[in-house]
Image (tube, rainbow, N blue to C red; front, side, top):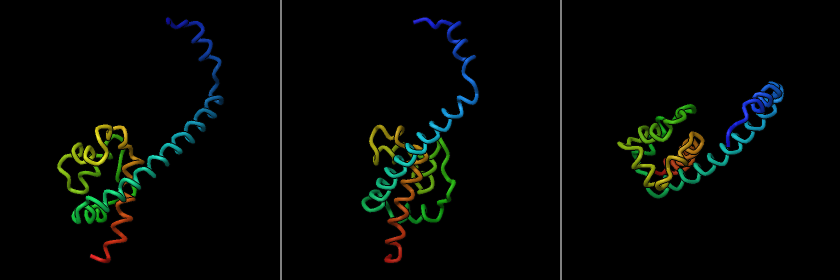
Length: 128
């Protein structure tokens, strides 16, 4: 359906910047809620990985190298894999999450994954 440019211009002209502040706040809350869910899912997945398949060297490397602001958008999955000594991020995440891993590997998920794995590491490390 073709766009009526006159109506579109009228609509855009009628939207005031102050109207957008409510939209911005609403979207910030939405993003924060989504990030919280992804982080929680990551914590569960990371703890399971640490308990079932992670190697000593991977967990100790994670514990030594993890900083609060390690992971960046678009690079988080590769950064995590590199941090624990994996050669290929794609293979590592595919084995853990399946073929949809690219959609799941957000910064919030990866941070949660690291947090969950580190919780397990901190619990077992004194026994090693």
